[in-house]
Amino acid sequence: MDNPNYRSGFVAIVGRPNVGKSTLLNRVVGQKVAIMSDKPQTTRNKIQGIYTTNDAQIVFIDTPGIHKPKSELGDYMMKSALSSLNEVDAVIMMVNAEQRRGAGDNFIIDRLKTVKKPVYLVVNKIDQITPDDLLVVIDQYKDALKWQEVLPISALEGNNVEEMLNELVGKLPHGPQYYPDDQVTDHPERFIVSELIREKIFQLTRQEIPHSVAVVIEKMKRQNEQKVHIQATIIVDRPTQKGILIGKGGSMLKKIGTLARKDIENLLGDKVYLELWVKVVPGWRDKSSALQSYGYRKDDY
Image (cartoon, rainbow, N blue to C red):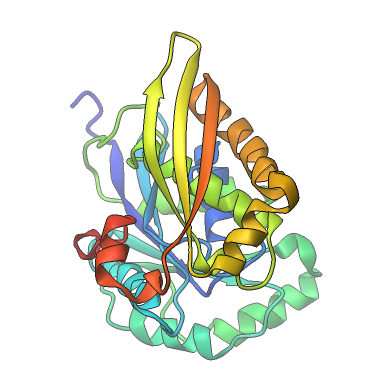
């Protein structure tokens, strides 16, 4: 290796649902690899985002928000989140500066007590509070665990993110560069395309729809030099949900497709022809065979 001082390693990001883990990941890699929404439990699989400089590479693993499972899908998400803690060089526990420490945070802290690697407390959304309030938040956590460092940031605005990265790099082991300079995730394009479609469903629908949805890419094929043809099926639990997703005269499905297509075109750098279908599979979240075929596999954790 050319640079004997090169540092590299894997860092897991854990936290309660909706503390901003995906926002941080997207900020760090400079483009959208994790979907974002204002609803908790958006992330269902471990998403890897890769940050590379001339001197270091950090592979971030954004885990599903840790919560008490209510279905087989929830159980999968929980195991996926916890398994990553045993295979990394450092762990970030992210908390929301606007929320008081709660039972969910305590649950995660208990799990982190067995982690032998450095654990950082990252207090996110500091742009939403005053410096005095920040001190109160830090006070709630400071004695809960032996933190390597406490790092206040705003993932959305970028405040202190650079300083956080420098801190992480400084503690990483010397090692090789795992991925090429220009690679920002290890997930295949199909996975990210399905996530971008799912994100639009989160943004445009309300209540029970988002957590009852899976997106399966049936076909992704280049039509010509300028255009990629994508066919995707949106899986829901109930016929009423199918009606909501399609909308009057197909209006909701068209809206989802239009927004998703823009993000997919940014990702692929090509024009995209996107076809969406909606299919009802009752109780899919509690069927092992359905979870496997929709991409939630036990060998992923």
